[in-house]
Image 1 (cartoon, rainbow, N blue to C red):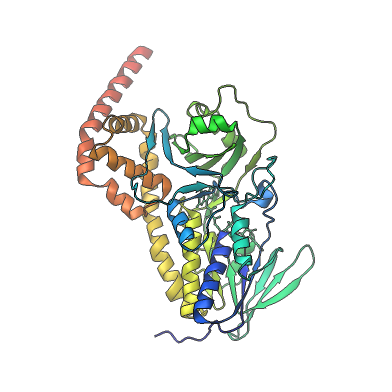
Image 2: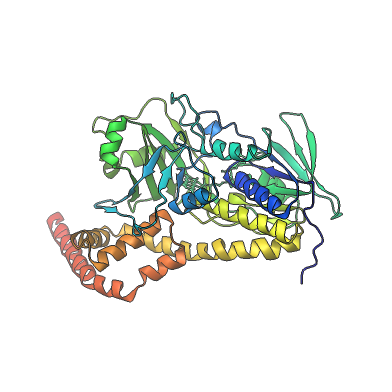
Length: 463
Ligand SMILES: Cc1cc2nc3c(=O)[nH]c(=O)nc-3n(C[C@H](O)[C@H](O)[C@H](O)COP(=O)(O)OP(=O)(O)OC[C@H]3O[C@@H](n4cnc5c(N)ncnc54)[C@H](O)[C@@H]3O)c2cc1C
């Protein structure tokens, strides 16, 4: 049995680096656990972003879709999203390939919790609203109300003593100013767009930050009536099967549409322009639409793998800086890793051994192992979406057979792929379902034959 060497006790101090969702979720759960144990804990969150700002400077850049599963957990925890934060309730998804599109519907109509589109910061640059729209600010205020202190400054470094009984030191401040705070436990919730990861790696206890890739996002201002009638409260996802795009989405948010692009390499603003000008994408914009002169855009990183050893004595990392599901529900991963880390810290202790056995191990089992399967599924899906003949034939077959078992099965499969509602291992089981695969054989053979004939005639025409 693990020897419990370090514990949180009455008046222990927790310093959280990062006031994004992972930081707030950790604080929220830590307060609950401390109450349960009847101990007083002092929690300080350091946050370098000012969420009252519009545009990237006040925003933890993301498509900002809150999955139905996370929304249900927040509601259960008493974190009720106010109307000022919800930009749009999402009814479903519209799945586009280069030549075909299909509306997906929620497979399990009994689950009540809705998917919500929000802003992480205080809305797009150049927007003119008056009330605060920031989801991250709302979460931070939720924990402030429960006694958490927020210091709006950047943490420059942390120092850990070789003597396990000496508290950690957090060094923070603006410019050349350096302030120090001692903490019994430091929580790294600084995400992947921060230079803190390098500093933690330099502590040489074995932390290796997640691999990342640069994505591209834009906020398109549009007439709300147009958005309502064109998007019909659906998120539009695009699997165009063309390089460099792997996934793309357009999320309706009242008077804006958020475009998010993930590629097979680091994306640039030129890729954004190419995407917007693709005919399949242009169909979703007004016919006379032109790229505005000034607009809100950003190039945030997204995780491609999980961190190694995100813990040591008196230090634990959560959220994107630790383990997240790749390309799916990063916010919910932040919630899960924070809960696991809180549980390990309060129920077992805050030594390296406690975090290894009661945080890292279960977090890897829950998220990292599933990511490996996710990579395989995404590679297969990338390959399939490049075969236009196959995708078109399968989707149109399913559209024709709406209401049948096979149509429902494919709808569920695609729904789980785009929403992340199910883990990747469940998606793989659904995809490999023998009845599903057998039923698709005749459709595939017919489509292949048609494609070959088309190619032969095209070649003959050229001659
Ligand atoms: C293009 C794109 C689209 C996405 N879409 C979605 C989506 O629709 N739904 C979803 O669930 N997830 C989505 N994600 C993932 C999601 O954004 C992340 O998983 C989530 O933000 C992780 O939360 P976090 O708290 O770990 O990190 P972050 O949100 O990055 O927060 C980190 C915080 O730490 C602060 N910080 C950093 N360094 C310091 C420092 N040195 N001192 C003090 N403070 C510091 C920052 O100011 C920030 O507030 C998307 C990601 C990308 C890139």
